[in-house]
Picture (cartoon, rainbow, N blue to C red):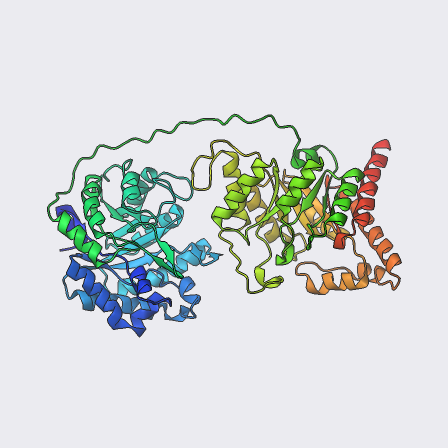
Length: 608
């Protein structure tokens, strides 16, 4: 009897976790590789679940795609590992249970983000191996991004008629990571061709049942639920789940009352949990009607305090606007930094911009420095990188910035940790700059990235970075346009050292409404110029500039560096309202003079 026939006749019991069961046994390697290296162990776990009463088991292939296997140097074994996963399950089953080919989400692979094309290639490679071995169905599970799952269902339904189970993983009760509601997503998956739709992972039984309250019974197809056993504890360097089979048994009836036909377990569940479910569902009948709790969505526009200051983006649309970068100190000696910040402000800078541990080297927190400057009535633009904080930390950090009234933020991905003072440190990169911009804009709407209400909206004006020092400007402009789509309000460029680049940028961005601040960082010596030219990716100095700065006298070299910067200001100011002056090595006097020059230059033009 096939899966759909079984589901049509009653409740079907799936298996429990494979990965956490292996982990609890002391294995911390690539679990999918064990299909080849420790077949007996995998077969034994499958047998335990079948003996506990599972009618359906999943192959040990959740992460057996090229992207995840590449982290273990196993990307060339995708087909072999998936084939062995099916053969191991079949040997354990001996006809007693149906076999589902397990495929996990692929969008987020470690700290990297897979493109749609990469995901399509990986999915087809893995699915082909599973289908060739004759699985009874495909289980798509633990998809945090509904659009990735939409694409996966569509792609597979075009290529196979066997049952497809499509399960999302929720961020909050009833809500996806994108903020979309589960009752909108599951019917769409059915329309795209999924035979069974549901939820797995992240949530325990209670919250998963609450999530299903708003989900109607599918008109065609069935509902599934594979909850975690609960939340894990971290003890002695290991994640440990509480053993609660009796609780799982108690939760079986509420799941069935929500219309679930295919039920099993995810992280932390064991054969004992499946046996407990078996014991309960044997006495339960599936429901054919269900009372749905319609979600009540109250649209409330948060009352915002009046905006006192015009944003930098708004200023740059009206007049020449100057941002001056002054990096926070690397040590606790802060006197010169604050002297410089005051000088730049007095010279007429519209804001002091503060980097977030540039080049992955620790500095005094730019939030602490920004807060202190704000008390001195000095406007600031704080940088925020994706490198040092996960999704939780980024949102917490942004809430803190908003609370302090630091509403100008530059969202950047950030230099990887390996380039800095601590190359062994971990780069987080839960998101890249595109997602960070979207996250900030969501908070302006009064929502966290999960869709949960903030109770009020933030007032961030979001800057984004742009590098015009590239051979193919078209590709760079496409990235800029993507950041505009994500919500960027204005842009700061990498340092520019030639007039031709300014021209190219001007011609390429005529269709962009967001202001662009041209980055200008004065050269101070030949050594400084050589370093930028030869060692800084993406910046090449012209022979003319390098020859001009080739001066033995340090003071004369600085003067020539300022002259070059002034010429760039002269040229840029006729095409762009934004000037972004980057202070070299805390020599704020140079930037102070350039600010004064820029303001004078514009005044002279107005007088003419």
